[in-house]
Image (tube, rainbow, N blue to C red; front, top):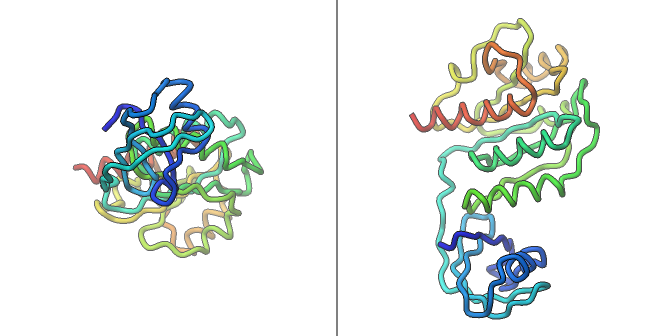
Length: 235
């Protein structure tokens, strides 16, 4: 597989690279007709291709071979988090989540949320770049900003957790999570979830957990939660 990975979600139906990928191919990498390149659709496949037309607005490729790529984990992992006020911290988390391995991300609007709106387009660009950099074939889904109460009422096939800092009875995530289980983990804003939100989540079937003795920033807590699940599954 080539060192540089390109992303074209519709490559199976249309052998064209998107304009941004075409610009990178021609203007940055200075690739020419006849050169080989690897493309992913973000849906689990790598495509070994030959560049037929090197145009910075629309490169045309020919698929020579397709390779199905295992995502690297046999469970479903979803994180729902209250985005921080500083976008660079949200972007850092998205990048690391994709590099480690995540199936779905949902920004939450909770009682103490610092950020009331978020542009998914920017987060998706970060996710695509992280997928390409880490040579993965799966692009996680990033859902729209969702109100806390609406989100916790949605079904999930697996164990559901809510991480918080209150003195309610709770175990660590590492103590409760079992290898191979699907997991949905809620991470709150800098001011934590409200006590009422924690209670509502517990009633909705979420298991209260802690991520350790230290009080963590939102993006750090998200990172720790993802890494904990992956470490347990690699034991």
